[in-house]
Length: 112
Length: 113
Image (tube, rainbow over all chains, first blue to last red; front, side):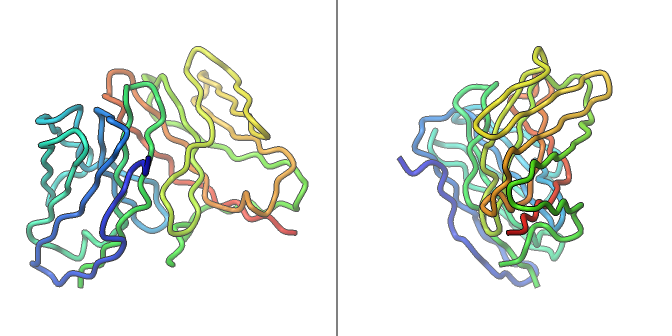
């Protein structure tokens, strides 16, 4: 049982490049979330999903896209990377609402 | 790696002392609250949670207090150890929010041996 796994751990992108941040969980959790964390700040919600095939925007969705084709995977897509997207990205999941989300160890992204 | 504690309020305590970390939450409709610990280069790690129908909850060496009147949470760590050094975040979940968390800014706890 690996919990929430995120890949890659680090990535450097040039402005305008695209990439997909991978997140997978092996706990059969329905709810999954993407957060970003800027230096010295708390986490902010980008997108979330309440189950396969269902996604919705969080507080800061602009510049990102997500999909949820399976229960296990919840990839986050950056189509045109911008310096403002330099951040640490965390994926989280819970089985039912009302419990604490489990977090992955993050992907540190730098856009230059 | 880069510290997520840059520009954060810092609490410095002596090993063995008790620590109290405070948090003001924003949404009066929040009904579930969580404290997370974050070490450098890692994701938030669950410490303790509390629901809005409670005022206090205790775990191993940790206690969370909730004051709904002034929208305030606190985390008390007893007999603080060097391994407790980290950034601590409170998070709230508004009712009917599908589990989405609203995070506070965080406090960096530094334990002196």
